[in-house]
Image (cartoon, rainbow, N blue to C red; front, side, top):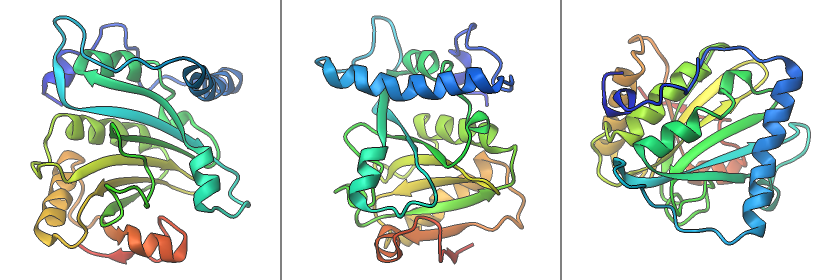
Length: 234
């Protein structure tokens, strides 16, 4: 993607398509969770761009969650499962942080990465999310890492052109498929949701036949599911 994010990408960020042996992957997943424990015991300093860095329009926070599918989810258990793993405020900070994260395609089980504007939790009930919804794109296995990178670069680069409507994006790793979702603030704003849909098609270079689904967070709360009973809205 030819934008400032690629131009300023650190040379040592590594090959995003590399494979990891299972033991190294487990260590990285453990490290993600341990970062939250370390941060919770230390006083967090406000994240700010470094000298000479290129500030993002908004600060963004990475979150990670993992749960056992057989266990019923509820708001309290979900909130306990999501771990804040870092906040970035500049292009350079993003690439330094992102280059050390496990790629979504290398995650196992029932796992999610979330990247949301600072101050917004990746929860349906959050004040910024409660009147909104999300576009959902289901992917066959093997595509998650590339699609995730493309979509977060589009969000940080303000390519959606919908003002403050975008709350964040999620990649959800599941056993049979992977899912990308983009959350916005106002589900009832059809012009905005249509623009988000069209930008997704362009950024991800989706074929015209691709099925895209939109689900309001109100409906998610009702059936206690992000992806069940979604309505196809193309």
